[in-house]
Image (cartoon, rainbow over all chains, first blue to last red; front, top):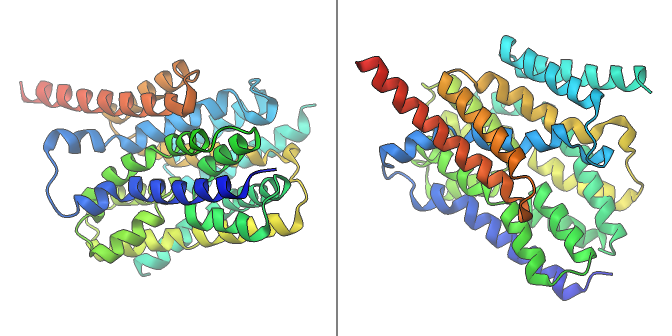
Length: 108
Length: 231
């Protein structure tokens, strides 16, 4: 059992801390111009952080205890390929999901 | 169509990933001895799936309170990068709007809005703000509701359905169309390589190494290509 005090310290601390991290630039910098070198780095935040977040989940899925899984690898490849060539987010999600579910039934 | 409704429409597919995960959190939380109201408070105060699971797991293992808190905060460090990345777009908004934008800033609202802002550089400030809140509508309140539902039902969600993989699929589908220039591709490839190479680091720091390294690689490539184009 989790201690009630510990739980509420973590909830409150995590809530405040997460808000501070989300607010730090949006709130404190606001309308002030950012230096060029920083803007140049920020242009690549999405294409750097999101792939870094996803790559380990694709290669070592938690659901298979970290073992690479052909079904999930194929679904990831299809999603990425369709998204890259069609530029259509929804189409890519649907194709990836169909691959995942289809192969999930086809493969033992 | 107003930008709020466009955001809402674009955010709807995220329900597929938000709902099972919110429910899973509700289930795991009640199984760890949290009451329904504690589980829901957790989701409302924090709204960050990965950090919530991390904190709960460490508390369950009997880790010291401060360790659980620090680890979960480390998992959320990427939010500061999202905040910086959105500042050129949403920084001029009134303070009260920026407070709410910050509160609703999660992976999905960030990825969805930056994809849209890059695609339509001529959006006005109020259109961008409207779009952001439109996106957040089918993402954040359902997160609370799903947590509550999971906590009430308390039955485990079968992993055989591959629902765990909804997160990677949704993000891959958004990342792929973002890779427009060589610099974007270099940034993504570097980030993936570093994140995998440093996946052994504690507190999810591999993600930060990959993210920062990828951003630096993208910025470098952009500079190099600009210089080459000029000479």
